[in-house]
Length: 402
Length: 64
Image 1 (cartoon, rainbow over the protein chains, first blue to last red):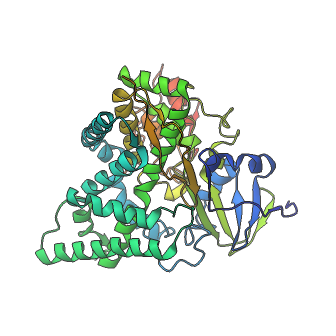
Image 2: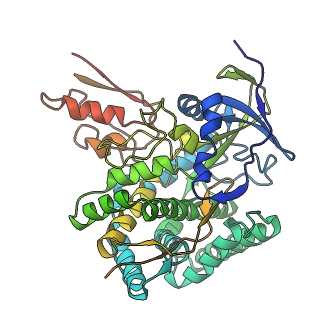
Image 3: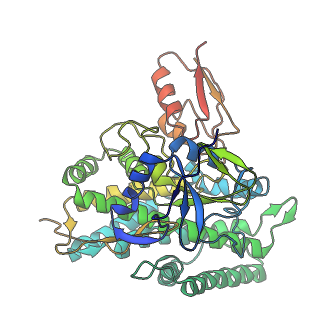
């Protein structure tokens, strides 16, 4: 049975504000609605706030298509592989990619991640202060990306610059489309040239990129433009999501002494911090995932029509009491991680989730072993932005103790 | 006690494996590939914890 459509007009997908607001801004809405129609001046879409409904919709790609993955881009000029493909086309790509991102394969990267983390943290400790976003969070996943793809590490500064251009908002929190497209074209151009170079040399070369050059779809070699497209997606999806999840985690720990001491204690004792990472991922889930409705369907008492766009802010689902009692607060000491949806659900479950988990575990343990004491630099108030991914502009940390 | 996998729902979060690796082995792609669904005596709590760790609700247990 459907209920009359409830609309809100004061919610915005894109914005800036206090760091906590990025996640907190759904709390009051979720208390009133499981599903709500959001009317903005430039767009309208359904927003699903209920944990069970988010999971069920994301598990149903036949109705909730990935043809559109954000209401910010209702008519995407290009279909990104594999994130904007639906089964069965999606399934082929996903199978090709999955073994390179499996828990086992990702586990092999741990020693290199620990090494790079130790280098970065030692340099920051010596300086006595840092901008965590710039000096650590953006750099670590980008280094790993280059190594995983089989690209030279001296490309790091170039990739970091493109990443900022393609993904970060301006200081006012706006996303400058021309600037972003410029960054994206730079990445596309790089992969086009690198693939052409490898094809001409007759040697596929190292890493995932080398493997991709041998991929077949239905018995036919995957076209190079599809491979470039897939490389772009790996770049767009894997770098700032991890960087910003780390930044929200460190902002929390820098502003909550008991939690920071808890993590530092575990790190000092060499105890696993996996549950800590899960809880931080749950509570500060950064992605807001979109879908396009392919056929009329009722969700949570609301009638959705074919062609409608739907937004799933994962942090809203993760703070729903239906997931776990006390979900509206962060608790690092529960001892059992909640089965949260920070990596989504259904066939598009974040391909890089196992890498992201290891990156976060290594990064937080490595930091706290060396810098157990720290705080926000006095007289600074970090600001967050939100859109398809939540982020923090800068996170100045200091007061590292003796 | 026996493990039941809805392989149509498993999407490779691998949280079951992270909780009880021996009871929930993975295939090469990282999806659950339970070889022996029988939960050994004494392992029931680990099996329950692993089942409840699944974000997709793809796992269940039946008493035998």
